[in-house]
Image 1 (cartoon, rainbow, N blue to C red):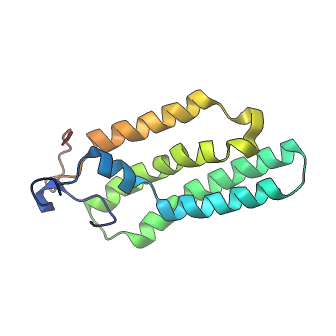
Image 2: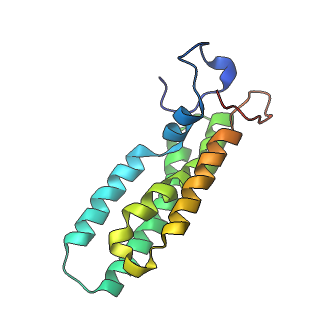
Length: 141
């Protein structure tokens, strides 16, 4: 299975075909999220006041959000696949990173915002399949 989301026309038929659940997992930048978890865990283990940890948590969230764009730009081959990842992967990072940083963010974390981000990524992965013709079409299979 390729690391990146693939156009339906390039996929095998049958159960190996990429569905919307698979696309969600592929849009999440796992390498970025894994590194972010290490950073958040390290910051959480350092003694300090809540406000400083909140500022650091939000700063690293923003830094890694921007870094996701750079990562996609450097790692992805050009084309519609790259465009789709360029649009969706940073939001997928936020959908995972914001709840991961909740321990640092303390009262700056709002659970409904996290749920909304995750819902947006879910909808984007369903309604933004990559077609070689450039036309997006819902793909629930």
